[in-house]
Amino acid sequence: MEEHTTGNFIQNIIDEDRAAGRCPDGIHTRFPPEPNGYLHIGHAKSICLNFGLAERNGGLCNLRFDDTNPTKEDTEYVDSIQADIRWLGFSWKKHMFYASDYFDKLYAYAQALIAKGLAYVDDLSAEEIRTHRGTLTEPGKDSPYRTRSVTENLDLFARMKAGEFVDGEKVLRAKIDMASPNLVMRDTVIYRIAHTHHHRTGGAWCIYPMYDFAHPLSDAIEGITHSICTLEFEEHRPFYDWLLESLGFDANTRPHQIEFARLNLTNTVTSKRKLRQLVEEHYVSGWDDPRMPTISGLRRRGYTAAAIRRFCEEIGVAKANSLVDIAMLEHCVRDDLNENADRVMAVLRPVKVVITNYPEDKEEWLLADNNPTRGGHRFLPFSRELYIEQEDFMEEPPAKYFRLKPGGEVRLKHAYIIKCEEVVKDAAGRVAELRCTADLDSKTGGATAGRKIKGTIHWVAAKRALPAEVRLYDCLFETDENGNVPDDFLAALNRNSLETIENAWIEPSVRLTAAGKSYQFLRMGYFVVDPDTRPDHLVFNRVVGLRDSWAKAKK
Image (cartoon, rainbow, N blue to C red; front, side, top):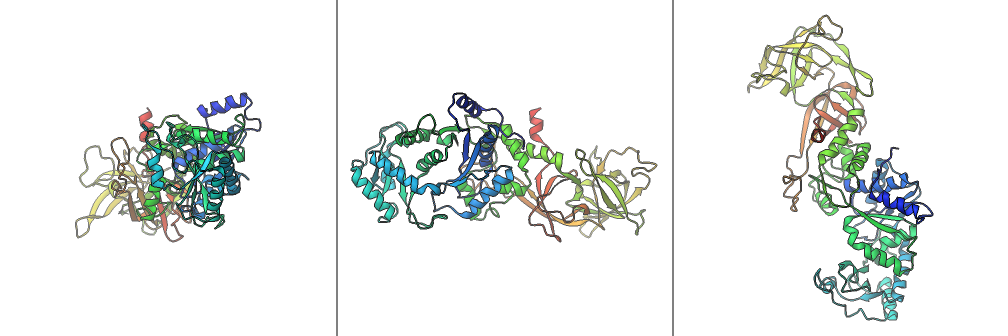
């Protein structure tokens, strides 16, 4: 596998730590998703970073599910996360864990904090805790329960675990400093009551650790050396360090949290809550809808794992948040498909062409290139009746129009030069058929093969072409001039984000192609076979067009 992580400030930190002897057992990172939804393109950046750093430094990367909130978690998400990471090209080998693996240890650590006088059971409601916390300019106020004795707190915490109290009746809080300028350090909640079924532990627990408590301790238990998080966790780092120090973990060997800028992409929403709303309220067909920024949606759209890895490498790792143009991601996809996708011809909006001087009973097979980079050839059937794109013919064309027009000539790709002799219309006055003649000596090897014609168009033979459904996708949201999706994201839904063409035609070389196979439809863009495809019903999704605005912008 290619190297996924170039030099960056996190790699520099790792280099310094190794040089100072702070990682005697090697580099150990982790990717810790919460199984409450499908992974999205932002997670792909974190996956590539964490697994890539481990690979580059000869270390290990754990997959650890942060399953501490059973009200939102499901095994469906556990399965999808594993599938997405594998598809991106990474492996955790035997290093897959769950925060729930450590529930007994985490409970014991909480007891140890209480015993040290560094945690207490609080009876305040969630709203009262928020009120007591204070503001950025005003200190918080101590809970009236903050002075409970160690003995009382241990007893109450044990009774919380035994299920004596209802949800929200009590919480366990760290005892730190209610006047701290960092609100996270104002006696953050570390355990809450939740009488609900857990996808792994069932009903064994009715209290669950908060992320801020479970995350650093899980890192320490697993021997993580570098705990890499996005910038929103920067203000949580003091608690991360306070907790590990309070519980006696050696400062030289315990994990250290490092923050980097999350991926913000134009025209894109990556809030898991908003993505879940889109799915549950049926604004999209599911988590893998090709308009979704989920990894499964991008995969179904036809984006390749190699392109996503390259994109994550290209954008780099920064310390400050920024907005990345989605055109850069499309550029990486287009580059990969240009190298690897076979060329075929498809007609999305057909108009019939009859070549009047071509024998009715004749059929020939013409040789065509598959891919100019990888080589290879295929055979195309040619016969009297064809389909071409409606937009490749105009009755009254503008100047410098080099496609088909009355009395005009055009070359059919890989085939003959044809001339439009007659336009046949239906009762409504629409073009129904074009009657043309062909220069039968103009195909490759013919006497007039070198005759210069300015226009070349694609086509399919009506007799052999396969019917296909083609889905044309656009951005799911309308944005401001900077590519930002407004807070009222549902009001910004692009009502034209999907156009379905049901009467397209495609050359027969794609028959019985499996889902996930990508093609370049000549002159039309890149397309992928959708999982809805059946042997008798081809379905294609447009991946990206042929135009590359990002590559042009770089010039």
